[in-house]
Length: 421
Image 1: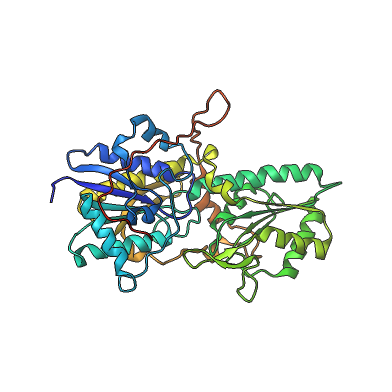
Image 2: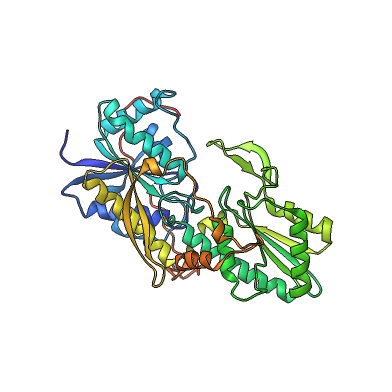
């Protein structure tokens, strides 16, 4: 076996404003250790590209392109939603991965993703010895939902939190201006299937009593239509309008999603069909107020132009740490963020077993949700506020647009028979 082995890096699941900053940090740290690491190969479209041997040779990327990854949103190498079954249920795919690793001298596998990706990384970390080709596997955290266990927060969340807080603040100023003769209720839907971290971030816009958003709807709090309508009416009477942030994962008292579209995604998660219009209809039918609603959707997770500097720092730090952990001989682990102080905000990177992270979900603790269920507490603000601090603007061109990079990739020669997932 060659002394210097290659890294295979892959992105998985929904992308974030800063996942490419993590990728860039992996490439830079690996290049700084050329005496111990071969090339960094990147799987096109996540684990699917690994299985199908669609591998990008990142050594062909210019230094300027690698640097530009750090301020470019999306997933530069392509992502996917594809869940590996257990080796007992689908040995074929695991054997194929090992064949790809062998064919391309891959000794390190980095999987950059969220909960389901941590599960995939954990499974892959277990197969090398079983199939006769040991590979060090490192999961790298990423998810805007902020629901990974163990880590204090997840790279990607801070920037989405900043976008949501700024958006509800700005939209509410618009509603304030028009409320006397026009729109009185504004509803902004944000992501968050089971955990209300993103919705909670909207609460950062409110500093004084009556500030927007006056209502936040969390997945952790069962939706009570009567109580909700009373709160909306109270805000309109007292403030002249009402701004609402609603998480896509809000459920009724029976545990049913208000926005269940009746289908599931590749991971088996229910597809959610838009809760904002459903909430708007409740406002209309019960109160008759004129309303507007908006769905943040992809906008929130691609808004690199308003990224949090703290978040970018976190994203880069976990990428660098992944390479360092691999060089220390670790496997089946993930670099995680540990907060050491709130005031001043301080943090460091530690290593945690993937077995403690895979298939676990960190929801909003009760102490972070106000007693009426419609807002955040001071302790929640203390947790959230440092994560949106600072700006890290991308460079802008003469056309007034951010200068995002889309490199022309060079793929390595395929050495194995075709394989279709």
